[in-house]
Length: 170
Image (cartoon, rainbow, N blue to C red; front, side):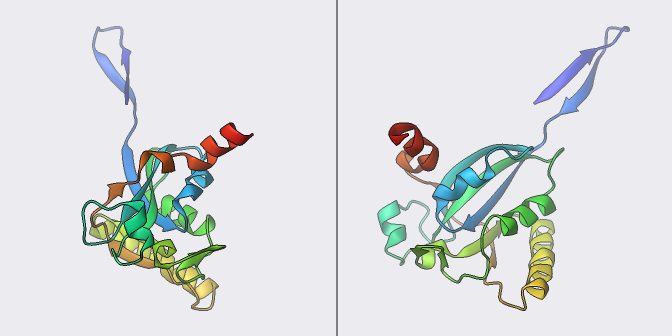
């Protein structure tokens, strides 16, 4: 999004330019996407699957544990407000990264803690913060850092599930 201001000389000047970036992370069940709600700079979230070999998977296949995919939240954020480093730090605040292949009552390889990067800068940032977290938590962090691979959007009924469930059942 670009906001222009018309100057007295008749020329337009950019006064704000929204720089949209993407962060993909697995914090357990993707229904936890609501944990990103209300955070300044977060533009949107989407439930999906990432990390496996098949570019088109279903919830049933991922839950079977054989696709290599995990449940993730794809977050669109404004880089003028949040940096990639902010997103990685937020990722670690939103879940317990010491639980291997689970998050709370959700158990299975598809619930592992994982950050997916797109370039070397993102990889280096994630590795730096992972190292910091591991020092803080006595080496107990189980989070993986991987190149983004075969992201696919989850089925419609998973999108905004917790929010829609509360509206339906109040």
